[in-house]
Image (cartoon, one colour):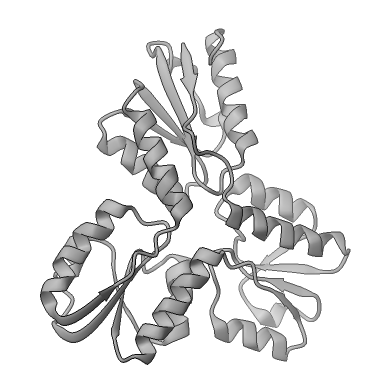
Length: 281
C-alpha cells in the first residue's frame, strides 16, 4: 500500500494566528473565554479547554477576564458590548474574513444590495450580516433563482466556499440586475488546498479527509473528492478508521481541512499503516 499527502496540508496561517493569540492569553494565567468554538476542530478545542479556556455564548456569564472571538469573525456589536463591560477583547478574526467584512460594508455604504454566497448558519456569514444589518444569503444555484431582481447588487462569497459553486451561482445572479459587482473573497489558502486535494484524488483509489465534522472547508474537501467518483472517507480522528475498509486499496490519499493539525493527519497515516501492517510513502 502507498499513502500520499497533497502538496498543501496542515493548519493555515489564519488558524495558527488565532491559536497563538489565544495561547498567549492562556499563558498569562487570567480567565479566558471563547465566544463559541475558536476553530472547527475537536482536537484543538479539547486542548484549549484543558488549558483553561471556557466556551460561552452569553456575555452575562462573564464578570472579568478576556473574551476571544472566533477566527471566523464576530458580530461588531458583540465586541463593542464586551468592551463596555470592561472585558479585554482579543479578536482572532482571520485576515481573509476581515476582507469580506470590509468589502460587504463598502458595498452596503454604496447602496448595493449585498448577496453572500455561503451558508446562512455559518459563523462567518452571521458575522458579516451583523456588520451590515441586512443581506441575501444563497448556498446554491437553486436558491440564487429566488433572489428578486434589483438595480445594484454586490456579491461576496464565504471564504471556505468552492470556486465552482461560486461561479455557478454568479451566472444566475448577474441576470437579475442592471449593475453587479462581484468579489471573489474565497480564501487563497483554501483554493490552493482544494486544487491540491483534487490533483491527489485523481491519482489514488481512495481518499481519507480528516477534520472536524462541523468544519465547512473540510466538508467541502470531502464533497470535492466524492464528486470525482473516488471512494471517500470523512473522519475526525484516527480512531474512526476501520481495518476492513482498507485491505483492497493500493493507493490512498489523505488530506485535511485548514483547521486540521498536521499531527492529526500524520497519526491517521500511522494508524492506517499499523492496521494493514505495511509501509507507506
